[in-house]
Amino acid sequence: QAQLVESGGGLVQPGGSLRLSCAASGIIFNINIMGWYRQAPGKQRELVADITDGGITNYADSVKGRFTISADNAENTVYLQMNNLKPEDTAVYFCHVRAFEGDYIPYDYWGQGTQVTVSS
Image (cartoon, rainbow, N blue to C red; front, side, top):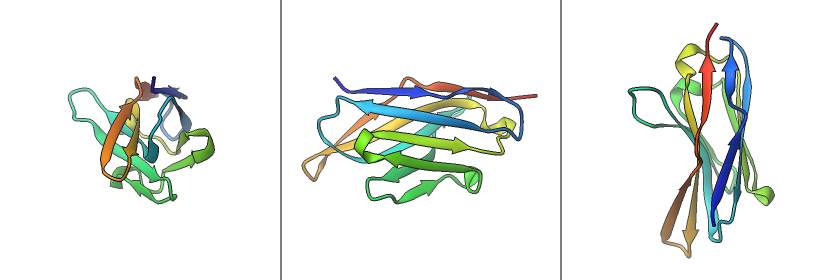
């Protein structure tokens, strides 16, 4: 059974840092993309950053220059280093994995979410 286990959320002051981790297990198809989304109260879930199995990264404009995504493909683990955090980064952060059966059939997997709160 596929499972994404997230860790690393918490409470941090503005300007501080946090590192999120997400370990995927039980996924039998080829993982193509790993990434992070977030959802703040009253807002839609949005992409924060993702990384392909080839190492190509993509970031939301709001986090460029502050967040860094990386992955250990051998361990099916993705990380999000978040620096210079701002109150507007406060949200539940969800790990996301897209895998493909063959070339065309995608499967999406989600973690349970981890709370990040930026407040003084």
